[in-house]
Image (tube, rainbow, N blue to C red):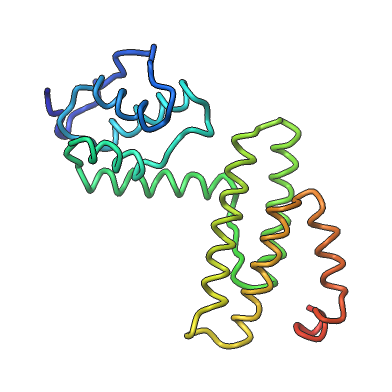
Length: 199
């Protein structure tokens, strides 16, 4: 095996006819085909590329997830590169959706406008991978809202808002095409007006 150290600009995937049919097996197969002792940015990008080409956009894993798989198989990780590559990859996914902020009712309303525009674009182009990414972003935002709702350091009104936003996100995940109508009815309800002052 040869280590590519810092200079791996000539590294290429040597084989495009992969045998593996699962993500984990394909990650290992590509890593073995790269024949490298250490894994960093370039290797992770090539493995992501192979996942995309062989199994489709929905199969692409984060650099950190790929690094864990190959480390379990004995690869030495160039940790600073792995960390930086993962951060860039995650930032790129967020940028594709614009800046979404579900930390308050007001910012959540604005963010749902962005989400709805994006959802319609993805549906028109039949981009299933994009719709999956959007759902994953909303699911992650819901987990964040649930954590805020249980936080002991936030003020009561902030926890109540976070719980409400988490419910909005849950409804969107279940029925995104009905969400706008549901939200309009929810905001008109007596319970909502009493709790949030008709915001």
